[in-house]
Image 1 (cartoon, rainbow, N blue to C red):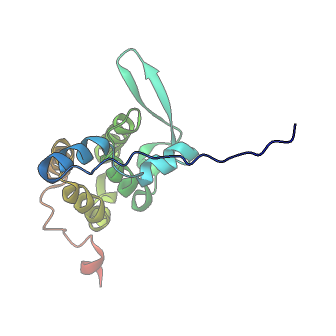
Image 2: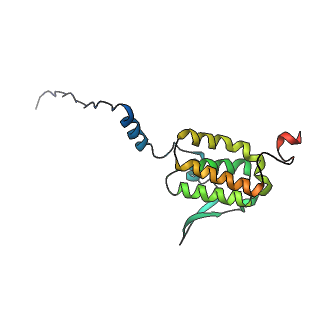
Length: 161
């Protein structure tokens, strides 16, 4: 049985990369979901204070603790970051969680507004058209429930000092 093995070279087909606008369009289609957000990381690890409740009207968060008792400095920026998600159930849970936190937050929301700038900025830089609409509607809801964001009535850290 003494034979010799001869390694055959494998030939890879090298496709030329498309140029111009067509390449940008194909790349955009491949990257439909943003890189993993903090919300997705916490959701997959089970670190968020809710469980997914499946009902007849869809899914929504069932809070383990009352939303008004949460640490808004930690959780509100995470939920705002989750608004970038496009895959289910991440997008729905982030949107519903954000709505719940803004609805019951009261005076806890205003000190957290500076921390919301980075998630909003990163979404605006992604140039995804539907997602900034989520941010705009959340901020308009924030403004309508708490008055203007520019006047803080002495509640922010700059006015306390």
